[in-house]
Length: 227
Image (cartoon, rainbow, N blue to C red; front, side):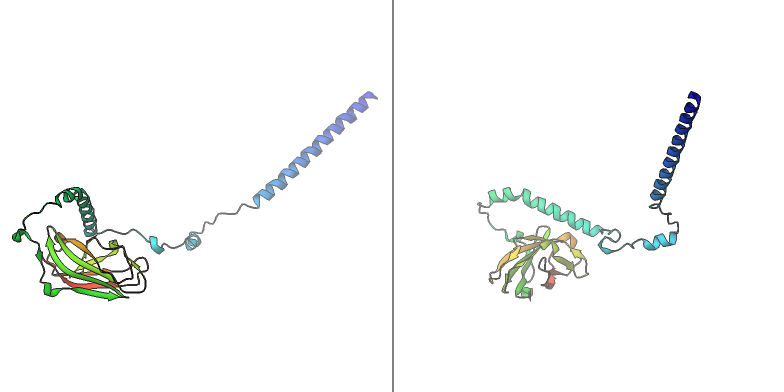
């Protein structure tokens, strides 16, 4: 009697283990199948892959090659600005001294009959009243006034300077206003252009636009060059 009970107990345990194993295997199968539903076959069609790629373009299209002349202009601007800062103290100390004028050392100037050269756009006047050689630079005396309805801002790093062969030049603005009020007041300043860049040039042109609207187009042409 005890032997039969023992055998029945062993058989019951084996059936329970078999049922549990089958249930675990079925649950594992279901979970594996659900997981495989999110797996897709990779697209090995190269033509379709290339079609889906966005073409290169927009404002970042390729690399821009900087011309050697533009590099030289930027270097000149940096050196001139540095020289101006370093000599400021010396000029301040010597400004109170009165020295005799040496007529032979006075800067060479262009025939005043060629000036002024001016242009008006939107009530804003841009004028060059004189051009003269000062040291290693061609200096242009510039006048600006605004007789329009609102003030206008300028960024002189955007000033386009070119010679009579269309080559870009560098110019350093000195004393010109960053904002021109609409009161008709005359503002004076200077533009300095390195003579070394004016090789065989007879005249130059200036183009200035307001910033950031860029609605005004102030252009002065055929400004004579002196050396």
